[in-house]
Image 1: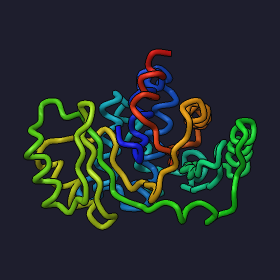
Image 2: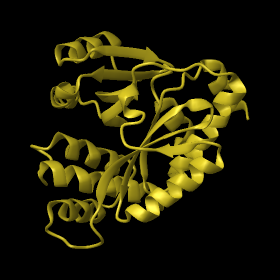
Image 3: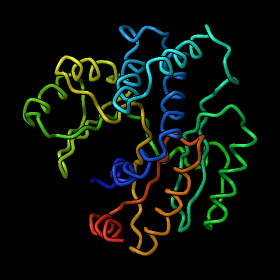
Image 4: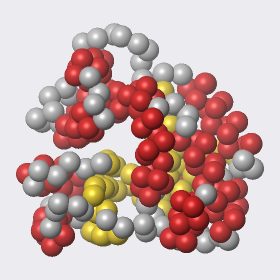
Length: 251
């Protein structure tokens, strides 16, 4: 996978993550809550919610859980504490910039867990704005190429406003400006393509190169952070060559 993407990390961990079914459902439910809160509870008019529901169904999340999350997002249900989406910034070992996207009902608990994990690995949390200038927000979609025509995918993505379409290791990644998110989503829906990952992501404007052992050290921190319940996404500006992914797969 290209260095700016973190989907390779996600796919590598997906088998282990799916085993933690309760944790997967919790994260999916929080994604649905946030999408419903921001765009309403009707998936026909809320693309983000429609995609979140599709991903929940793909993981066999019960229908009642999905509906409960939608109602919580729209305010029809007061079940549970209020959730909020936050971004925290920091540095991993070797000066790698981190942006941590979380959904939480307790800021104090979340920042405490993040600070503990990052500092233990030799990094540190930073003030807002300290590293975010090294990233740009973009619409990102990722899904397997299998069963689809690459030329048609490229054509529909570009026509919908995408800046970049890559095909690598049996996967498709579409990147476009923030304002293209809805149009690309609709184009994929019309083509009956359900993305495994879709949303507005933080992509590094410049990547840093490290020695392989240093890269693995940072990736171990990323894995530790991914295991925290409140963490939804992790973004970094470290280039990860294919040789490192191969080394990790063999471990």
